[in-house]
Length: 565
Image 1 (spheres, one colour):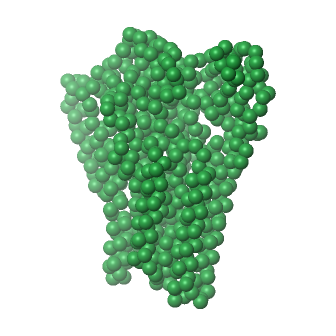
Image 2 (spheres, helix red, strand yellow):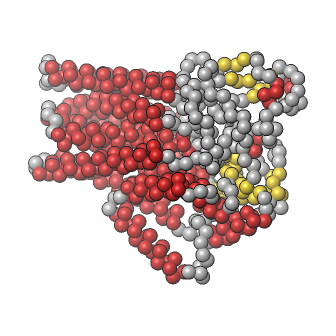
Image 3 (spheres, one colour):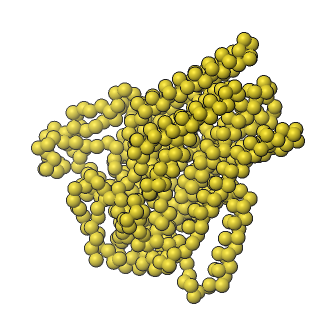
């Protein structure tokens, strides 16, 4: 039967856009999926993330035990609460995800059979995922887990394996080790994608990216539920006691590193998951870690100084700041989640993040919003530190002056690294006031490229360098005479790679939803039903399935696919 396309396909960095986004720091050319490999830096990054996780949790538990041995039961209870409660929340969410991913649906076997039949009987296949009434929720025509034997074949051994997996995951989550398991699983999938060739490599790479997204979301949630309050608590105890115990310093340092690490790691994984964005280099990630390390350090130290003197007013201040930030985020109309209530909960969680640091939640230029937030945080830090300095009994001593200088210098260093990141290491290129330069000097022949002759829905992702013509030329198509205007990147930007064409063959997963704008996750990363569909197709199809979202900018359907499904 014939099915018409209605959107622009997108894939998990398995397709190369006809025109790659420009950046001021020329780098190696983008690799085709057959050439992309899980690298040694990726493996080292995951191992370092495991080290950060263990150091944060172990130092907090060690400090809690030390408080108990010192008969400081109040500090022991608070420290332990900020360890156990966030960990339980994360384990429950992680197990819920596992239960949904591991539960087979009735349609899984039929979906796999349909994929195999389509892959063998048609050159191009089209699987449609339509909106089922819920906002953002897709009904997968090929929903299910990886294809396997039917209920009547090998059911005994397969049932035992499933029972063992449920038992194993139950034990893992009871012992609060879900993050460790997911990190190890990510390492395993990455190494497997490195060792295997196509099509196994593609399948392992998809699963690795899904697992990386899950662990990034879980760890970011845990960091701001556990590490952030733990850091403020320990700093407040140290300031109030006017002394720093070695374990207190170790716990505070580990919590601060965990916060800075997870914000930067989350941004890197999010960019890696989107083929319409350039990936973040590890050099840029390290600078971003330093940026957040110093700004969050100054922020939490100002919190601790104020809280050591004004506990009640500090609580009022935190609640008021969180409410203002949450309403500000809601007013921005974010589009991260698949339902309205999930979106509200997400905005409330981002409001907690905004208590400590900046976190981009909207597409487009963020300078104005970031400037407003930075000025607000700066004024708050100054006010909190000044109030402590004026009312602190040590205000006339050298100790108070040192603390004020530490807050000021830490915030200044964080701002410096923020400018370094945006001016030199941002994946999209350096940030300047001029933006893009429009010049009337591009020859008409530049439009006669293979990519320009393709219909809009066959483009792998929306190109960032757009070609424009005069109004009289728009109806004539490429190759006509006339003046042509092109939005050109700044000088020194990397030129597009003309020899890379988007792939147009193979199965297509249609999602009857518009693609979410960056910095949101794509729907096939947060809707786990779409994940099942992708994994079924990936395991059965001979080529990587293309993911096709509804294109709001296409006024009419422009092409047809012949399909057997």
